[in-house]
Length: 267
Length: 316
Image 1 (cartoon, rainbow over the protein chains, first blue to last red):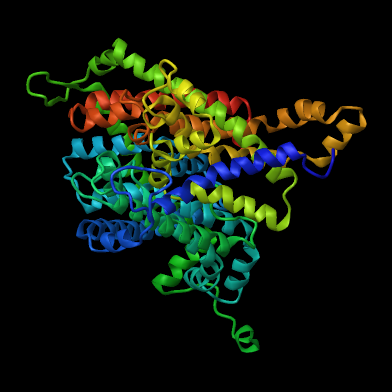
Image 2: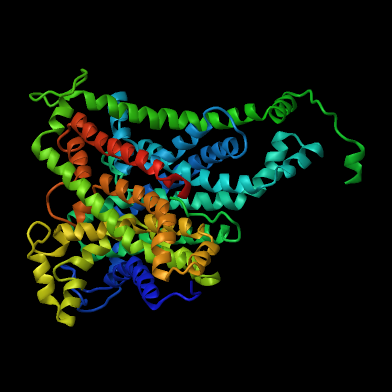
């Protein structure tokens, strides 16, 4: 087996990566196009005025605010629940452990539409009206797994002797958690939290079932994609959404890259 | 430090906080139970509760005159599912999912193979990031990008004109069933978008499986006289299969349940997910929507059982 890749393999791998990334470049290009009515390529001219137009749009700001609020609260809930689950499942073996870990992964393993329609039917049966909290409920449910994955990997690599040492030195369980376990977990929780934020901020499939008449930023975008009103503004928002999701993903990667459990390998 | 060791604290504490702390420290199973209770309650109530609600709704029916849901147990929604028009939708969606899975496997393999075998150090990190970024980045934006590219006046048509392959493009668009007025409203368009969306889910497990193939196996195979192609076919490929199957779980499941991509890029005919969405929304027929969404769950249950037999879960 030769140590160097054949030209054909390099070509196919390179082409594959290009296929994954080139389309996003066009989104950025189109945000500067002067063409309003079609997706004409190459764009007839370039302008930055759509960024100013988008900035003035109240409906975009409202959708953005809602998305950020939902993502923050869903992330906070997922951080608490995911860390607790990780603490329980990382080392201790007990009856039903496998079933619980499956339960945590399920909301993201089943197609989003199943999660969405399930929540929708539950709200219908229980007569719960759509509200801010119905969106949060759905988002927190599928964000738990992201925090859990990051925290559990870190906990498994943390030596139990650290905890024993802390207890031997007279700290109680709460002090040990506060001063030993939590600092150890910090970066993995930060990474998990950022990925959860990115996931929630961008979620559209479950949200369409739990939002009712409310408009999050992805729902605003979806409406524009199906019935375009002002295409250039949509392009600007798309660039913005791309940037907002890229930053936490990159940050999560750099926070955990020196460790064996790099964040994001499992979605 | 010496001072603390000298006045070592008593082993049993008398305050409530101390007693709770001691109890948890001495009984790891109790601690685990206390920790797991809140997430378990949340997932049990919100998620399992909702899945049960979905199942329950699927057995209800809708009153044809009032349009209200009749909460009586019956199989009418499932009977409706078997209507030829609805069966068409199921067959169409499963076919699409199978084709997307196949194409993703073929396209993902070289990337995963290169990343696992040849990429080292910084290249490897770059590969990882380049595969992971699309996995997490905005789903809608990624679908939208293809609407721009595949539009009649878009990038692809321009590229075809520049390279003189316009007749080829027109030929493809002229094909029955899969063709259409432009790629953005054809099944080919939907297919491309699905492959594009889910390919990272295929790359990562294949790469993980390939990284576990010991180099010595390849050397042994070569020493025994196998040409590189033979080694690939008889050693590498079989060992990578669990990874491929693991990846296919995602590509298949995600295609089955997606209702947004085919709505933005594709013809006006429905896929499974779209029916679920339309039935629960404008049509207000939650029972039929519920019955429809039981279909992907059932298909995935079968798929997962087969995948488990093939050892796919070890590759996740």
